[in-house]
Image (cartoon, rainbow, N blue to C red; front, top):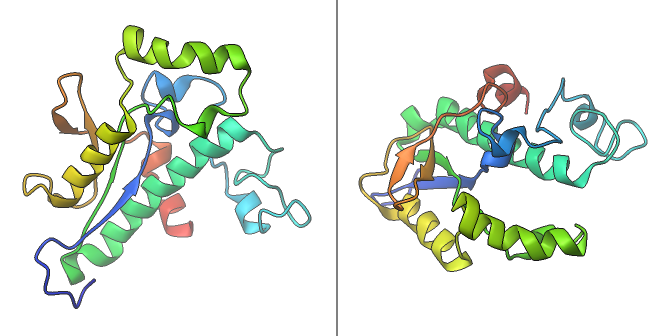
Length: 178
């Protein structure tokens, strides 16, 4: 990417408000928490460590949230290590709640039935896969979204904004170690 002649060099990583504990969605249990990264240090294989980054027993919902925290931390660390030298923009985004994908396939049927309309009509956080793709494309190509190190989100009127990362999702020591 550094050698590319393309003027908009960007590496974009998808994050989520579910991993961002400074939001309502991020405070729905189980909360994202990487702990001291001992599960990751042990190889995430359950033999020398744990299948979870924090070293605890496997929890699918928490694993998803923790993975999004890792994505946001990775983006931050790339920004710190490489942005100034390369000019590459490193950013993450929360494209919105895409409630109708297979992400919830392990949940009970009642949850899978009620969650999409809840997101559409109550929280207004639902977005279609097409809209989420457009938001990702916007972060990749929009000249107004060139600030490196940012975590982008959209408000209810579909305007992008710089979102705040939680303490866990912006921990510089965990980002460096990760």
